[in-house]
Image 1 (tube, rainbow over the protein chains, first blue to last red):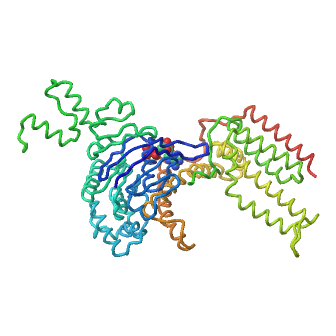
Image 2: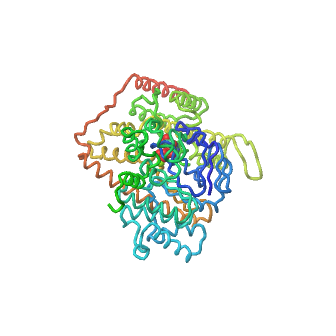
Image 3: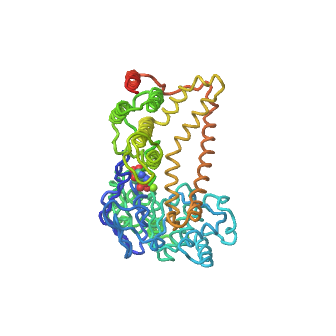
Length: 290
Length: 265
Ligand SMILES: Nc1ncnc2c1ncn2[C@@H]1O[C@H](COP(=O)(O)OP(=O)(O)O)[C@@H](O)[C@H]1O
Ligand SMILES: [Mg+2]
């Protein structure tokens, strides 16, 4: 589903001493099927932005279009459409509450009035998508699982609603590197297999560089950059001004390019690790098997 | 959605009221509450209302925000008003319908009681709005200090209170987050009959309890790790000190007592 924001602003705590303009005139366009990396420092408005997508927050002004649904300050998203947008909150394991994993994953589908048998098959599918063995885990209490497993179960709880748009708010926060990678690889696979439009909120440039084909950089409630990753990474100075780093691959390329003659430079589009390695190997004429 | 509740919410600032010592504010409130119950005619109530308005101005907070603190007790006030109008009799009859009458005393009591409630709420929210939870509990601990000699665990009570106050905003935030997360999974908290609605609260209540217990455990561990052994021999970084502001508050208290004593009938 295509998503557009047109001059969207959001004001928290209107009329109190805690009033705060968290989004300022945001305009953006996300084509259907894109994998979008949303980057910005803590407090830049990332979470606020994504909560507008399924009606948890209403814009104070402006207009949002998702597929054929239009959201304005006075017009909310129709309840039946909400299941099309799967929102995975930060630390989603905190929302687990059922006695068993299977029941918890079924919570979403059942709320949208799916028959029980179907909800169960959805739960099975969703748990297997996140890499868990359904039979082994379905009757366990979610509170006895490890942190990484809990997170996967919670993500499965959202996937079981079979959303068309998947939004994840820092899904790797607080996980170890191996856990991070497993979760992100899983998400990327689901994105491709299910033809989803995916929005990944993160403050790690590395993660965004690896998976995103479109990037949004937020700062102080505004979109300060948007475009393809290589376009964004070219503006390394600007990113540094926003206290964001370029991925290590990009700084590697720019440092090595300073030492190379103009004709031999590495192309800046090689910000993905595998592509960069392949390119360098080819340059060095090393056979692939090494 | 939950941020709209002003009660118990501290708004940082540097006004006269913010900078006054919490002990004098606490003592003043006790005295003010007594005066509110001693007031019994229009002059004394007017004095108290005028004084409350003056204090609100002193706090430099917006009036509309402070008035919001009346919202939760709005129903209670309405209820007492209706009760008094119906039940309290005496004086001129204003209105009659069959055996039902509205009489002077009823209206008078209704007005006075709602003013009393309103003033008490406004004044105590003024206290929490201008005093940080830390200062509040320290003030309380110091004021109740003498009771410690007769075996009242003053320090522990104050600590419990400060922890509770400290975690109110956190728990509110957490509740807000969990409500949002479950709504994103299609949970509905606004429709259905009472039983159904109560059942719908389970997806919020359980995660909330789980996280409250986790926080409690973490806090206990952190306190132990930093060598907390109870209040004995503990010193403070910022000591409470009386200033000229507190002398002014004392003067205001004496004047207020004299005025109410003089004019009440
Ligand atoms: N519920 C809320 N009430 C008031 N202010 C909020 C609330 N949630 C977030 N904010 C404020 O809005 C700004 C953006 O926050 P957020 O969207 O959570 O940023 P991010 O997810 O990028 O860290 C922050 O300054 C934050 O303090
Ligand atoms: Mg956030």
